[in-house]
Length: 106
Image (tube, helix red, strand yellow):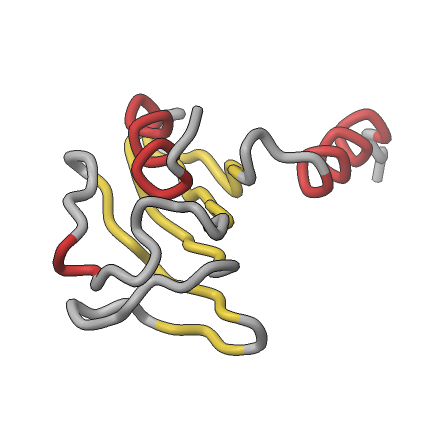
């Protein structure tokens, strides 16, 4: 089985150096949908807000919140905390809006 070393190196770099703490984990449906991870910085606009109070971009949904060693399935009363890794499903075109909403910067 051939090994594509370029792809392996690119994936390692993507994991270590992400644009504004944003990583596209997977794209599917012919490149229209993406599962993304956004690391919430301490100055994120959603910190200490409940999920129900945050208006996500259209066709976006939160999948999980990784908080230290815990995996949280977000519900309406789940509160965002600094350092949370938010995993979301979104349309490819909505990635910048989602990043701006969760991380507060582009």
